[in-house]
Length: 197
Image (cartoon, rainbow, N blue to C red; front, side, top):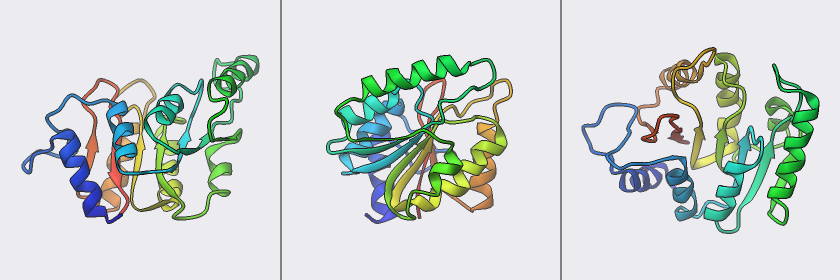
């Protein structure tokens, strides 16, 4: 798919107007589920989610994207106040939730998993892992090459919160790479997305 065709589909789905400011938010109430619907409408078949937790968002992807193969990447390991025991329970819950789906579970860090995914092999990636600036920027730098030209790179939680660096990382990435068009959903915890050129 050509990048311009993906952009056209986004503009139609999200009701973006020509003189809107960046990032394009559109004039239609939208959530990350709206973006996932678009993945299905574009015929996307293979993707990756970084930061799967309980599998709630992955479950929506399987519901809205026919024939999906999804790489579910999460170390499910001790993190800040979350114990190893809790993470093991979350992992088991996720396994049950996605049972029977074409889910490839990769219980490892994002940087370990990215080494196992060929460049240009994914239709989309959804980044929702560590939210500190360095981690978000690192995920973008390493996962963008894994997406096909015309595919979509996206992620969660584009808003300001304590110790969060998503806003700053995405602004830095788009500016450093001269990305002139990128998008967000119209909700409190914005999902951001851009087209792989």
